Structures are given as C-alpha cells and as structure tokens.
Length: 208
Image 1 (cartoon, rainbow, N blue to C red):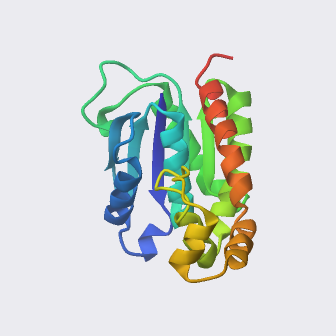
Image 2 (cartoon, helix red, strand yellow):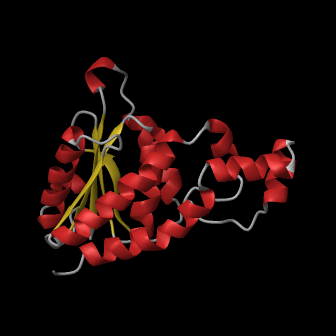
C-alpha cells in the first residue's frame, strides 16, 4: 500500500494552495483504479492520500512536482485494517513511513523535494533516486515543452495515441519545432522510465 503525505512549501508566506492541488490531483486520478482513500487536507497546508496502484503514485508525483510548491513524501508498507473512512484516521507502517518521507523531503539537499520510505530500505533508496532524477525534468521543463507533451499524453502521463504531427497542427508550428520541444523535454526518456518506477514501487512494497 502507498501513502502520500504532501506539504506546501512556504505556507506561512503564501496563500493556501490546498484547494487548487486537491482539484488537480482529483483530475489526475479521475477514472483511475488504485485509489483506496482520496487526497484530503489533514492539518494546515498538508494533504494525504492512500493509493494501491504504482501507476497512480507515479501520476500524482508527476503532477505535484510539475506544480512545484510541494514537499512530497511516499510511504510504502502495511495499513491497519479495516481501512478508515479518511486518511487522517489511518494507522500502520505506510503512514509512519510517509511522515518520515515528507519530513526528509523538507531537509534533503537536492533540488527535488521528494522522498521515499519503506520496510525495504534498499528499494526505497533506489526508487527515491530515480524519482528525484525524473522529477528534475518535470520541475525544469519549459512551458513550451509542456504544451507539446500535454498533447501526446493524458493527465496520467500515459500516451493517448496522438502523433507529433497532431501536436504540431494543434499548436500551429512545424513538425521540426515539436520534435525539438520533445527532445528538450526528455519526453522519450520520461516514457521509458515509467515502467521502472512502477517496478521499484512494487519492490518497495515487498519484504526485504
């Protein structure tokens, strides 16, 4: 099971972004299997959700790191049953790990504020390294590049079947311009890394 605990950066000096991010994550998860408990506000400017699908975890991480302004903690492990009505009432190792992860995301030295904790420390470390690496791409991708990417994938980050020619027509630019944007966005590399992220999430949810 996967618990994501997410806290707003600089909340004392900025407006409350929780309603906006909850709406954004709801769009990402709409129609997707693997949501045990939807994201809700826990306390202050913090939100939390419980997911059962690695693809859902990757999709939410992608959206949060794209938006910026959020510390992302992913906890992997067991959850005390029966499942509570809301994540605020939840107990279990996954919740403990998620709290540890989000606190680490606040103090880690890198430029991508995302951390992972699980009962399988090695798998969590590998997943965290990969997530931070692709997260750097999400956080630094230009708006022009995102425009091209968004025409080829859905809110889950999955290919829609649209072609580069379709994207070029939609944006009114040349095929060469779209190709340049996608190369700058590391689009092919992003698509190739998703299966590995998902496998590492499953590994982190397995005993050492």
